[in-house]
Image (tube, rainbow, N blue to C red):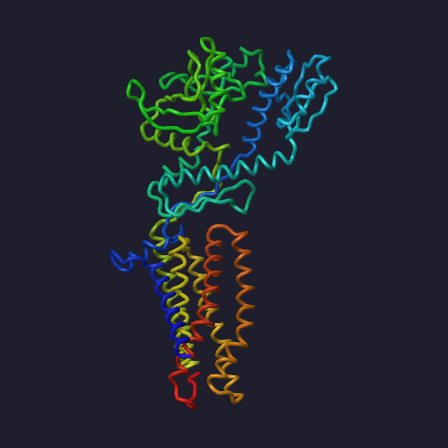
Length: 531
């Protein structure tokens, strides 16, 4: 008995030391500062910015169909089907690609190309005029939407991580479709972070069809009052100092977004800030083919966020390296290269909600939360001492160890402590007391039935264990549901509650039983148990 008790005691002390290290670490700068270094505070406690962003996934789908339309025309011409027009000519159905003007004897060849593996995301039909229609399948649209949202989340996360924001929350927002929740605790420069997150940095290079024009009306007049289906009008400047004009560009970009492998800020020959970029291998090959075919005669426009930043002539073939100038400041060039380097967003964003939390409000929340937790714990401990006398000390020690284990877990795991998380800690204290009450009342019943102290303790823990496990499992399942379907602080509450309950099973059953065993071993036979 003594040897077994010593082993259990050593194990409990080891657990206590390990989890103390979890939330204190190696003390330096004082105990309070050491705890602050180990426990990550959430937005509501530390202050920062709260954003709800909407991803315009329709842009990604439209961009994909634009690229597929250009690819389909090239594939058809390669198969010998020439003289046709491919584009999204029906404004009522922007997800439908129409190939019209197909020679009568070539319709079967065109259909063979359109129904090939490369266009498996489309339903292929034949129009009454002998044209082919490719309509994107609903399953493919859902897949693109999901990938666009996931890519946007990962891109924002990479950008925020590069800025050094500690423990950000970036995840899908469960209250709406295609929305992202962003919480950045302890941000110093809110304006800069907002600009970086909200800017799509959707960089693309388009072929120039015509321009510049003075305005949209001049562009329409020059094109017989209608813009070709395979083209778009965009505003911008040919150089940093040129006035704003209107350009007619090919709708399908030559390279864009994920085609960029790297981007770095630098300076041009005149010492002005610029950005140099590198393309992926596939994009570099495509870009080389385009620039080689149009060198000496063609122009290309560098488009950032649907605005022309620069128009350049194609003097020679370019494979995988280019340069962007555009009157950037040094900070703008650094931020833009960061956004391109971490991956351009696949679609633009708009913010539905922006809320800031000042550090003073967070400090007040911490103070009030700590006061509530301490007051609640002291009240519970006092009640246990009064009502269960000596056994109340046992329960109070178990509660303190429970709190140490919970804080140590948060320190080890990097879990963010939020105001709802503090509520989870308080609720865990209540559940811990509930477990001790179940055990102690069962022990009292056994003592009233005439059992010895040792038998009463053994029967009390044995019979209460099943009830404790049942109550804790049902609550943990509820916490799991909150974690799966909740977001932000709700998840923090769920994690704190779930681990606190697991720690409570350990402290209420194992630790409390060990303390009772130690008391019984030192108590003379026949002396009443203080409970």
